[in-house]
Image (cartoon, rainbow, N blue to C red; front, side, top):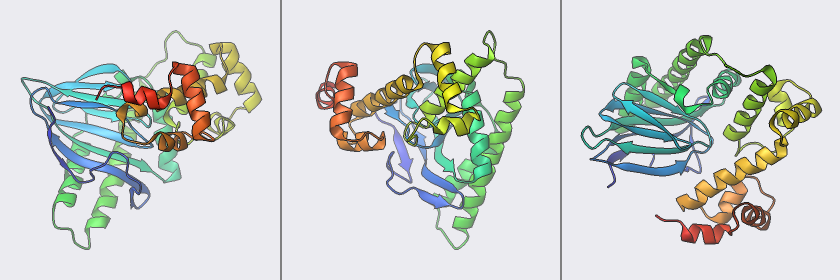
Length: 290
């Protein structure tokens, strides 16, 4: 059973996100769930998404990891996450949501640093009444009669939301400890997470040198020695995992998925997909249950 939902931007994949100052806004809205509502698994694109629980209880799944949520919780999702929500039967969920990504270089660096540190879904639950209020105000601006100040108001709200988000996770980072891993493993975890969260934007693995401030040859050798596989192998596997989720969603054409994931052609994509999963993208889509 699907929820009663009030969408203001009614598509997961918007061809033209709204530009709000230095922030791209992809989606914003409010959902009132019925008993045992299920928001089916879907892949996020190049955005950060906040799910702000305003009432009830339920489960949020991030990359198949289950997280119980309740009123007051905020969950942050990263680009390319596989996301799913199940509402409680006894206490149906109500939640606000907003999807965005900053263009401002300084804020973007801070966001990417936090994305790298808090890779585990278990680290992505927090609470912040200020963010809850700001997103609620943003939704009200979309719902209400807009005037000459609405755009300016929304730009301010988004910038404040991002600043509070950065502060919240910087405070969490102060007590965050990598246990039982060495420096090489931490660096490789960061590389893998960067690839996973930039899977739509990453064109060349040499970009990892800029992100890590390490020579690409050194980084490549260290990654192979530490993980037992090359960065290219990890990148290709991450692309195909994302592709399969999107194939099963049945929202985009196979050619569109191929293009989004930067394959040279649909043929190259289909060949890699069949080699990995033993089935063509078209057949896999046909066999996938709705």
